[in-house]
Length: 287
Image (cartoon, rainbow, N blue to C red; front, side, top):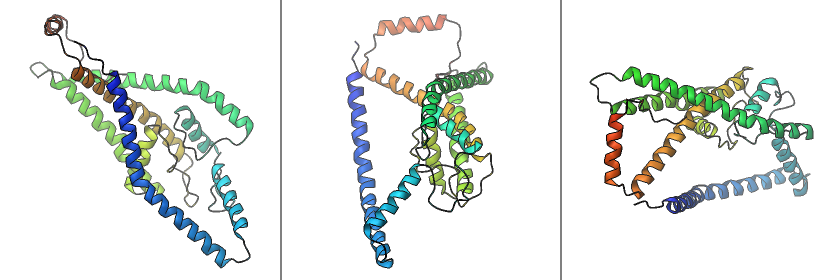
């Protein structure tokens, strides 16, 4: 007897969003209030120290700073800061467009640039999805090859997919989530936790933009730093997309097992049919 789990999935999804909203509010609202009060106190101190200025003039200057930041100009430093639109930075920006990361710290300011960005994304996003799909298929093919190499006569067959999946998750976690924060911590001066946060937020395409590589005006980066980061992002996206697909597949199977009452006669028939069929690769990582 089949039980529809779609309404339960919808309710669970909404509950998860409500839970996230309550936790984020609990964790962040008090800190926001503290920073807001601190900022207002700093403005009052500034006006007291510089009596030639009034509040209205200070508010206009703050607005200028905010507009500069929105246009990608860092208010720190001076006019000798490196351009946000040299080739390396432009290459990095193009990668954030087609991968839909969209940090938000940099965007086209000209009408021509904005129109080009629309059409560039219109064709670039499907191209990126096709490219990541091919990467996923290639990775899946290598995993199946590895499975056949690991699988030997006399070894418990049911353990093989678990071994391959463990290798896949461990190697990817080290390569894309554990080691890169060490590099970012060294180059950017972040803590390891901040580097790890940036790494996951980037590869999951959430892309808040609160941490972005290569934007500190007080640091001198090698010219290809952001370009290399963009290449790392592409391959990391392919790996994490596979991980998310595996998680979604496992969750769907769990829901089906939990809410579907199996027919024993059909299950027995399916078992006999599987025993008659030739052995197939047992890797379960969708591409």
